[in-house]
Length: 493
Picture 1 (tube, rainbow, N blue to C red):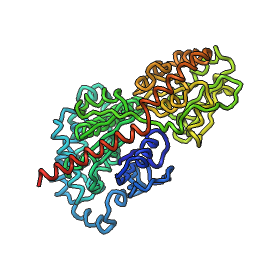
Picture 2 (cartoon, rainbow, N blue to C red):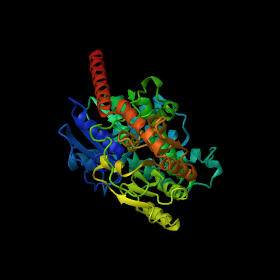
Picture 3 (cartoon, helix red, strand yellow):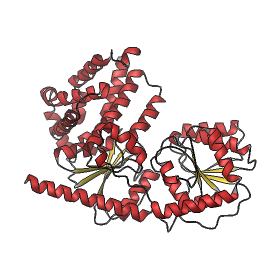
Picture 4 (tube, one colour):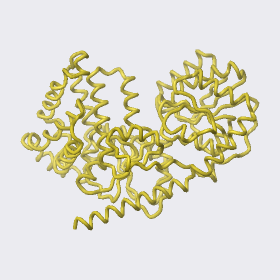
């Protein structure tokens, strides 16, 4: 199972899902391939016995990445570097690299050619050194050549001419984001990636080179989230074009390679199918909650109308819109309080911006950041309504958990939120504080409707979104892929 920036080092919905599978799926041994930003990470979970090995691959290691991607230590590294000569780089590394770079900058490379190029790069790296290949003068020349080929294209031709710094940044991003391509073969029956991003590259090449069956589950759509992040960045046009192109290239390769794509919502397929995912390979498996833990209970006494939010405070959750929506709702519900439960460590500058907005709108007694909640199954009972203000989601646990607790949701129409809520809550457009705030006030001012929606939400969650249903679905998926691998091996022999 391959993760990126989540399990087991960061909490959240994706990590909850991973832990559920590792704990609940029967007769499967897991190797966790955890791709992280840096190497200084601490596990947030006690790994279950089914997890036999944890492989850490930091995309930004402190120094050489060799210890993380090659299993044979420094002696093996010395031999690989000795083999990574100018001649081998030019003959075996540059041709597939140029193919991938052309796809990144301009698209249009046939799918088979792109997958072959990635496989050739990975095969080269099994006997040669990634860092040495990427630092070779010929590799830098290839980047400059491809940039020069496309600098007059439809997009870059309208922008300021690229600089050497732009090219250098592109090469560095490529080096870091493609690092998992150098990982030694994992010898797994099934490779299950939790996102169509860097961590899935070993699955792409493992399917091509070793016949490893490849399953892909997307929670939020990585490509969509990269579009949002890159468009909001201050990078120059060439770098923005490169980052979007690299995310698109990796995503396209993942979708084209996967034996099964099991998104957590039908919404995701609207992005996946146009980027090479075959509709016949898409099988939605909804997230599930433990009905024994997440259930209606006795609410703690409270004297004010209360909304609860279960979300890390960072940009994709759009807490700024939540704060503005609270100001709108407070105009109709003067004693409103909004309790935000979630980590404040994901993006400290963003947290500071949100606090400044709270102060500017004089909401200090209304919107309260409560930090991490150790008992998530209890936090929903603190509120009359649950609110989600995200601009990107998959099939969020905060929605189905609150539904299971009989607490109706007011949520933005992103990802699979509408699929989850249906007619048991209120769904509004994202980034619209007026709509979100008025919907929140509407429910808080109507206790009878809240009770009706809460009961309907509980009934829907208890039949459609159970943990047992989720676990059994993945057990069947793994079993089918393993049988297909055995049948394929037998036919080949």
